[in-house]
Every structure is written in structure tokens, then in C-alpha cells.
Image (cartoon, rainbow over all chains, first blue to last red; front, side):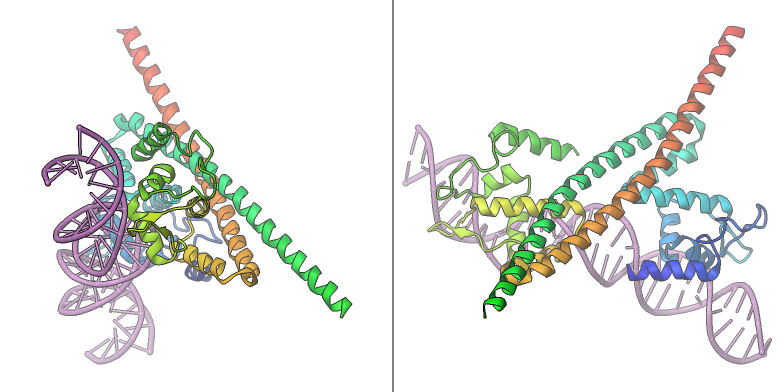
Length: 161
Length: 161
DNA sequence: GGCTTGCTTGGAGTGCACTCCAAGGTCCTA
DNA sequence: TAGGACCTTGGAGTGCACTCCAAGCAAGCC
């Protein structure tokens, strides 16, 4: 939590993504270094390189000396991957989806199915959470009541004294 | 998903928990073996022993030969722990809660705070999931439309032929 | 009594998603 | 042209939540 707050502050400081339009550079001049993408996505450089290695990123363009230069398209993809991650989808399934994207338009049906399954999982997870909320509220109320009662007892005792 | 379905089937077959009242035995005769608890909770025996080792279970009663005998109270606790697990709470925090319970009634305030923080986390997580749902639906619609268009094209082409 | 199935323990192993390291090359500013 | 910040790689390490193993008792049935 502390770290993600730090990241948010960092984003605001850099004037990227959080307070500005996501892609401040026009297509063609959109060649972001890895540290710019770190500041903008909140992912670490390690994680960005790891995503590329396991096939979760399409191969990122390189400078003449071999350093990564991310494009607006790459940022869009990372943003979508971030959403998939929030659904709780395993990384292996995200890689599968990335493979389907690479294979072209004839995989539309498979991709749709994968997303629909994910959608069902999200709905189920939300129902689970709703369920836990009822239990949590029940217990919270119990503790709140119990404390009120014990405070009242203490007050009465001090009045009697 | 396949495994959890199998567990559900097992529960129904055993006539425990899923289709019957949670505690089929009256207090005093409630001395369940570990395998009965496995069938009823869906946890593995390994996990039950591990929970006890790390202090997430109060010490469970034993038979004269040292085998575990779980009580209705233990099942209630496991059921609540299951809810906490569904919230996504880390095991270390659940252990902290269990310690507070062991310390007695003067920890009511701390327990309430812990559950309220958990409640806030659950609400935040649900908002995240709701957010991903919008993206998922957008993409699913995109694929559905794209496929409809390509089917229509194919039909027109075959009519022309 | 023999057989199968179940339970015990400490400690080691697994899978996931990162996370870090060492050693070296690159970029930018003064 | 010197210094410091930034980038590269493969491979090893981390933290979490289990998950499994070996070796040995224990319980129930024929």
C-alpha cells in the first residue's frame, strides 16, 4: 500500500498517465524508455523485461544500441494486461491470450471465449466478496455492540461508586 | 475449478455440510476425525494440520491415541476462517486475528479495527473488479461484432458466387 | 493374525509471480 | 572526457500458501 502510494505520487510528479492523457507523444515520436514506462504503469523494470521474456509482451522495439523503446501501442497493451491482472487471471492464461492475438484475426472466437470465461470468474468472485461482506458486517456489529455494552456497564459502576 | 466441483460432489455424497445442517452432531458427541472435517470443509488434511501448526486454529482436542478430534466450535471457526480467506486476507493477518481472540474480550476494539480494514479492502477489490468488467464487456462486444461482420461478408460472397 | 485404510510428525518440495544480482555496456551533462 | 545515472543479460532468490513425503503407529474388518 505504501509503495503503490509512492508510485502514484511519482506519476503525478512526472506528469505522466495519472494526471495527463495516457500517451503524451504522437505516434511516430512515441519511443519511451523503460524508466518512463515504469513511472507510467507502476510496474517495475524487472517485471516489464520478464513480461517480454515469457511472451506476455509483443517484442518491443530497440534503439540502435539495443535499449528498449516502448510505443503507444505497447502502453495500450500493458494497460489491458493490467486489467486482466486485476481480474485475477493467471499469467499463463494472459500469455495464451497474447499468443492468440499474435496469430491474427482467425482467433477472434477463441479470444472472445477466453474473455467470457474471465467475465464469469469475475462475477463469481464478486459474489464471493459480497458474501464475505455480510459476515464481516455481522462480526463488526457484534464487536461494536459488545463494546457499547461494556462502556455502559463501566459508566453505571462509576455512578454507583 | 474442476477440483472444487469434485469437493462439492464429495460433500453431497457424504451428506455433510452442503445439504445438511452444518453440525449434524449435538455438542458433547461432536468429535470429528480429520477426514470428516476434510469432507466437510473442502480443505486438505495437510492444510488443517498446517493451520494448527501456525496458530490459525486453537489447539484441537485429541483422542487417547493422539489423533485429532474436531468439535463443532472448531468447524465454526474454520468456516469463519474460510470467509476471511475469501476476502483475500493474508494468512499472517488471520493468525494475528486468532491471537487476539485467544487474548480475550479486551481485544474487541483491535479485532473490530482489523475487520473494518478488511471490509474496506473488500469494497476496494469489488470496485476494481467492476472496473475490469467494463473493459471485458467492451472487448467481448468488439469480438462479437467483428465476427458478425465477417460472417455477413462470407454470406454475401457466397451469394455472389 | 493379516490386510487395508487412516492418522501422526518434521521437514522438504511446489507453483506462482515476481524480484534481485553481478557484470558490463550506454547516455547525458559539465 | 569524466562521472554518474540508466540500461542490458541470464540466472538465482524471495514470499506466500500450501502440498507432499517417509516412516511409523492405530483402527476396523474377515
